[in-house]
Length: 276
Ligand SMILES: C[C@](O)(CO)[C@H](O)COP(=O)(O)OP(=O)(O)OC[C@H]1O[C@@H](n2ccc(N)nc2=O)[C@H](O)[C@@H]1O
Ligand SMILES: Nc1ncnc2c1ncn2[C@@H]1O[C@H](COP(=O)(O)OP(=O)(O)OP(=O)(O)O)[C@@H](O)[C@H]1O
Image (cartoon, rainbow, N blue to C red):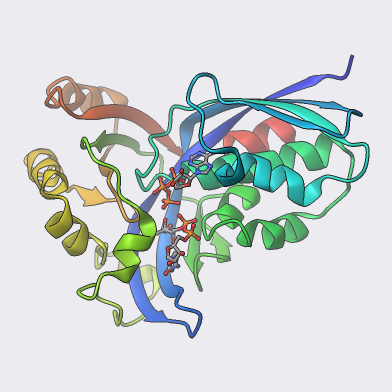
């Protein structure tokens, strides 16, 4: 029997997100700070020689052709290589938490390991970019400053904070926000030092709040207690706290209609730690 590899595919937050331009292929250039979390989807992988891939989404199926886990696995699969993959989703879909990208990155890392393909991190990141702009940071497995479309990464060590994340009862499609004519696309590039001094925002926030008033209501609610911000293109919003206890106190009062969770920010992803 081949061994089963059990991994957490972590969620991420965009601590800020500035859109600095648009490339000729329509993709937007941005600056962002990716904070990885110690919380995410549980995935397990068993390799075999059946030549087939089986994916069990634990009762939350997505259309097969669309599933980033299978798309990632197919990028690595060679004749005679097979795998059984199980994914228990916790990360809300359309939340701006990078769930699909994280699943794809974890699949690339796990199957590269189990199938003994010997691909480097750079090779996996470059394959991952074809699946989604957020895949490379999860393959790198380190909280990071990012530019380009999110694939030019510089690892950073961020202070330990606890994040209260709230998901209003809506899903946001990333493409729809990047297509909006009112999106600010010309924020001047800034330095990391300016971000750490507090000069940053999320350019998607105004568009998301206009299209999804419930996100605005959640920002207002959480903003009573701490500075609150959108992650990625939403729908989730978050605030940072110095201790888990402070975050828990506010979490207990979150209106029932909204999902919530508390997670610790980590510099190294739980996937990378497990594979080390
Ligand atoms: C907003 C972020 O979450 C920030 O971390 C990411 O940039 C989004 O990454 P993602 O969800 O992996 O997005 P993708 O699946 O690559 O892209 C979805 C769609 O969003 C638009 N898109 C995405 C990323 C980007 N930098 N510019 C874009 O214009 C494109 O129309 C693309 O077709
Ligand atoms: N394994 C997967 N997990 C989640 N979504 C998936 C997966 N495979 C494909 N998708 C599709 O990817 C799309 C985006 O899902 P995801 O949850 O990653 O978005 P998001 O939370 O907005 O992330 P991001 O911050 O990267 O924009 C959805 O339309 C979903 O159907």
